[in-house]
Length: 291
Image (cartoon, rainbow, N blue to C red; front, top):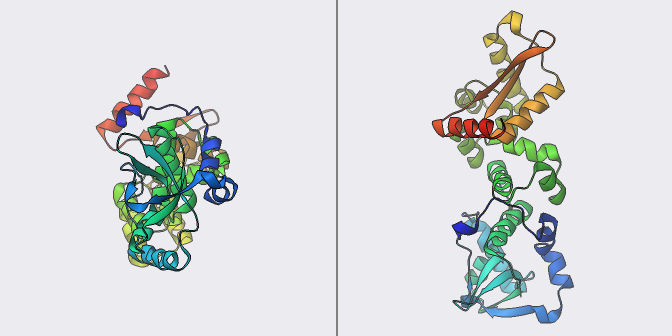
């Protein structure tokens, strides 16, 4: 499958795929003959499903509901002629819960998707449906942009999110992995993490935030105080909203922290912070390609 995952836009378009995975509308508008009851053993999960963790308690609750009411929303699957099985495109959580409920059949809508479209739909469904943490959501946005060439504007419009929402989540991925782990675990909120993006040592500051139980506002004040102590007084200039927005956009695009410092009235300095030789090599390729 990896050979087919090319960085390109899909002919069907993001908006069309969004419509494909609107399960409520799909169940209501699909002709009855397009809905089929499939043996549950003939349905298999997608091995490239981006979401790997399913809460045991959440699945148990859904299984209890399915025992009483059945599966109210059909899965979306695609047929695999070589094996005779049906691969899940959307609805793996319901399939897992139906197994726990010991159902023998499950309702499904069969769609004709390519390998690349299956992955894209899985990513979009996770963003729409699942209780993702901020880091998982940001990673899904990045995959949609990198694998399928979607822009922030396209994602925001299709997913009914603001562009700033998408950009702010992507900026989180510039933080060190330790800080991202704390966000995944719920030790830090996304608001805390965003306040640490411009910090010189986000891991150390994050530990102080956790140890002291600081609020987001207090974290912002801590970062600002640290930056003021480290900055040279005669070079210090307050950044306006446009400069901060530009820093955020460049950081999200490069996936490396970008800082813009104005010096005087017309000049200034733009700095890019990389964390590995791989990052540096990627930056050099980007600069060479656009030279």
